[in-house]
Image 1: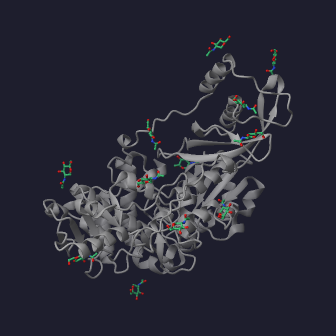
Image 2: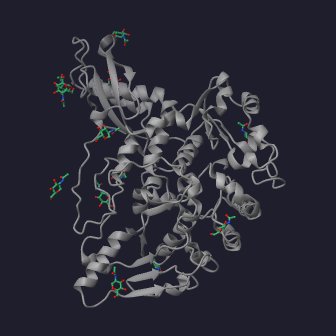
Image 3: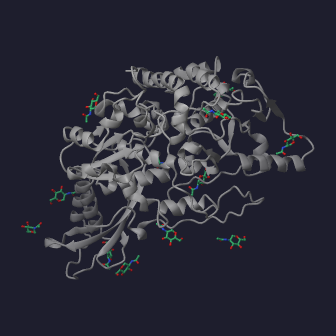
Length: 557
Ligand SMILES: *[C@@H]1O[C@H](CO)[C@@H](O)[C@H](O)[C@H]1NC(C)=O
Ligand SMILES: *[C@@H]1O[C@H](CO)[C@@H](O)[C@H](O)[C@H]1NC(C)=O
Ligand SMILES: *[C@@H]1O[C@H](CO)[C@@H](O)[C@H](O)[C@H]1NC(C)=O
Ligand SMILES: *[C@@H]1O[C@H](CO)[C@@H](O)[C@H](O)[C@H]1NC(C)=O
Ligand SMILES: *[C@@H]1O[C@H](CO)[C@@H](O)[C@H](O)[C@H]1NC(C)=O
Ligand SMILES: *[C@@H]1O[C@H](CO)[C@@H](O)[C@H](O)[C@H]1NC(C)=O
Ligand SMILES: *[C@@H]1O[C@H](CO)[C@@H](O)[C@H](O)[C@H]1NC(C)=O
Ligand SMILES: *[C@@H]1O[C@H](CO)[C@@H](O)[C@H](O)[C@H]1NC(C)=O
Ligand SMILES: *[C@@H]1O[C@H](CO)[C@@H](O)[C@H](O)[C@H]1NC(C)=O
Ligand SMILES: *[C@@H]1O[C@H](CO)[C@@H](O)[C@H](O)[C@H]1NC(C)=O
Ligand SMILES: *[C@@H]1O[C@H](CO)[C@@H](O)[C@H](O)[C@H]1NC(C)=O
Ligand SMILES: *[C@@H]1O[C@H](CO)[C@@H](O)[C@H](O)[C@H]1NC(C)=O
């Protein structure tokens, strides 16, 4: 239950200014969120019941945006009860067990397969099934918190005594049923009685030969939308933008189109709250949601401290999962097909333009227009998308939280970090930033999270010399040095190369960005920190475990 409690403190330098006039409403709102999740933990929409309060918050303070904790970010995959089990036919994929391996081993041994050729020193035949068995056993022994789901036949590595092996896995802690893929390089030795033994295993994604060749789709598509990224598909992530195909397909569809409103450039939680409202309405109306993949990331998450436009949805969220879960079409594709239709047909496509959020989804239910176009041109806060879901609508529109997962590209970084600690680590979430500086609301936080206090507290909770991952918004890297006398400290910045210019993440995100490098921004940092924290064995929270200060300021707990 602790997992799914979105902590609720604002950080970020410019927020300190905001805090005085926002703190009360933030407090109201965060208490509500916490209460809803902690107590009910049932409804498919974890924030639903706080909607009236949220609306009040947004509409009362002129600059208010959705401010929750910027140091822990939950998405659909972190809210276990939100996942509809029916939607996961493969959730029950059976992990490979010791017993299963032995069974296969026996079958091989009893069959007439030639035994390994153990005369040749320093050579291993990668297609020999005994090789795979050796790897499977090795992995089971080393990675105890991983469920291994399926292996591919090993292939040659770079040397005669090496093989590259690929497999799919799931972390036993992960609440989504998403599978990840790893491929590593193994070095073997032939032991007694011609048994293969793994003597060395390479790191995450080191078995390059076992990686399936990428299928390159030549994608200068007709009409070439500059916003559409080059369609070079990762062998694992298929988040290309689907095209509608023919004009007839376009005409046959039914769409719900939200044009850009006041939500643009607001915080990411505001974005999610609004986006899921639109998507929820589309689901309710059985329509395809027209979505803009180009986002604006609010200043709080940007190192430049400015709002930045042109961020791809797919940097942050799992578009592949979204495509599978909901009916969506990318705005550029949609407009192009619409334009094409306009040019070649006298009869226009029926459009219903809706200019006020006060027209409810219920009233649109009977509308047969091909396109329902909600326009959000009113002054703030009348132009927020989520306002469609207020009032009566809240009773029948459900935000599809299960559709919104974190980007798999980010999750691969999470897997790598956890994997490098052999999935055997503890973690502490240290909230500092603006809260630590605000002595009025959090009088003890700063001292309770000082290096000396941390060391004393953690000594009582974490075994000495354990791997300790620190998820934090403290920007100063050396702040935690004192803890190194007792623990093996890991910080996000220790893994910089995972998003550096030689990384897979870098390659894959720049493909989404017309070949230009993508910055690893504050939101991505928090997303990764959050998920690594959730994979730890022992988890220490700031506000339950380190300080008696309340999460939302004095006298709120
Ligand atoms: C609110 O926004 C207005 C204009 O958008 C700005 O002038 C003002 O400084 C903002 N207030 C705060 C507290 O940031
Ligand atoms: C899910 O399982 C079915 C058969 O059980 C299989 O055909 C399908 O490819 C699997 N889907 C994924 C995404 O693994
Ligand atoms: C293989 O042979 C062993 C002993 O000869 C026997 O116990 C085992 O059941 C056999 N396994 C299979 C799968 O035939
Ligand atoms: C490698 O093993 C496979 C399967 O046991 C066998 O078919 C193949 O002939 C072997 N290759 C070499 C070079 O030994
Ligand atoms: C793997 O290596 C062996 C020996 O070096 C060679 O005989 C075999 O053809 C290689 N297999 C592939 C698929 O390249
Ligand atoms: C090798 O085989 C012999 C007899 O077949 C057996 O006694 C011995 O334990 C085996 N050694 C290993 C390491 O399996
Ligand atoms: C894509 O197609 C164009 C023309 O159809 C061709 O000139 C270009 O080389 C192709 N690119 C790739 C990567 O195949
Ligand atoms: C990728 O997903 C689209 C649907 O969004 C599907 O049509 C396409 O076949 C998929 N490509 C691969 C390689 O799986
Ligand atoms: C959407 O489809 C479902 C089942 O197909 C149906 O029960 C529901 O009434 C439809 N909703 C609308 C608004 O057409
Ligand atoms: C298509 O024509 C309609 C009616 O003239 C217009 O409202 C709409 O904006 C046009 N669509 C595009 C994409 O130009
Ligand atoms: C990234 O792309 C470059 C150039 O295409 C390639 O040489 C490099 O191996 C790639 N790195 C990774 C980690 O995939
Ligand atoms: C942190 O506090 C919670 C709530 O009081 C408690 O359940 C948990 O065991 C504590 N964690 C540690 C590591 O002490």
